Image (tube, rainbow, N blue to C red):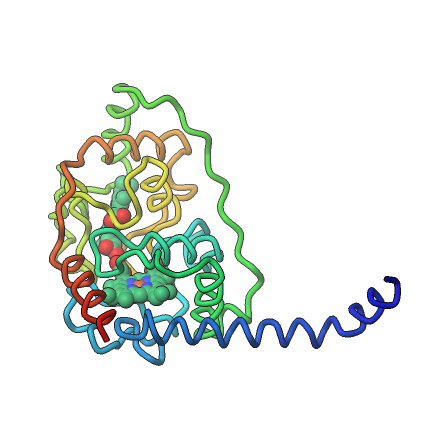
Length: 250
Ligand code: HEC
Ligand code: HEC
């Protein structure tokens, strides 16, 4: 037993490399079969189907991600990437990739991280602390409306949240109509809080970390929840499912 332990310790550095090599190979394979059609063989977001969507597939070579639990401008955690991959971004062509095994998901995440040098160059990112939720009451929703004014959300999202603020026409990415569902970050107050807390990198949506108080962030999330109507299927999501369906027939 001791001898085996000793041998394993000696072999450790090489073993790790071999293991991550095979993980990368599995990830690359899963990527080519399931992701390249949209995200491109090189990961630059230019897959064969990409031109069909109003919101283009992410360019993984940039190493910038919208949905993160980490601060503005930081890399996402593995958990963030696993979540986006398996749950998708509702209302976009990024439909849930929940047909992959757990090992495939982990490997494909390792692979997309290898497409940007940023991941190797920086220490592992840490999630921002999540403030504890105050009770979800009508008063909290009313305070959220005030926080919406204080945070100048209307500048982009419009006074009623319809995505038609005065700055909207000049922005590279259209501000979300906050009255429509689904939202790409998810449906719960926590999902909405995370978008407002961390911002959506590579879009004009800023982070309100240290700009608004923790309580105000929750109030805002409750307010945004209160604006939402019933879920609708978007053209992008429909196109995403169509690409998936055809792709699987081959
Ligand atoms: C049918 C097209 C399609 C397929 C297939 C697809 N994606 Fe996407 N993906 C998208 C689009 C479009 C976006 C951008 C959505 C946005 O920016 O709002 C996206 C975004 C993402 C994001 C970024 C989320 C963020 O925070 O910015 C990740 C991660 C991702 N995809 C992973 C994958 C992986 C892994 C696969 C394969 C297992 C895959 N995708 C397959 C269309 C697709
Ligand atoms: C400078 C313009 C700008 C300001 C100010 C702004 N937003 Fe945004 N916001 C955007 C854009 C653009 C997007 C869409 C990003 C995308 O679709 O990828 C967005 C996205 C969001 C989302 C994510 C929607 C989803 O689908 O998950 C939420 C929630 C949100 N904003 C809430 C707010 C709130 C609340 C405020 C004020 C505290 C605010 N925003 C201020 C531009 C802005």
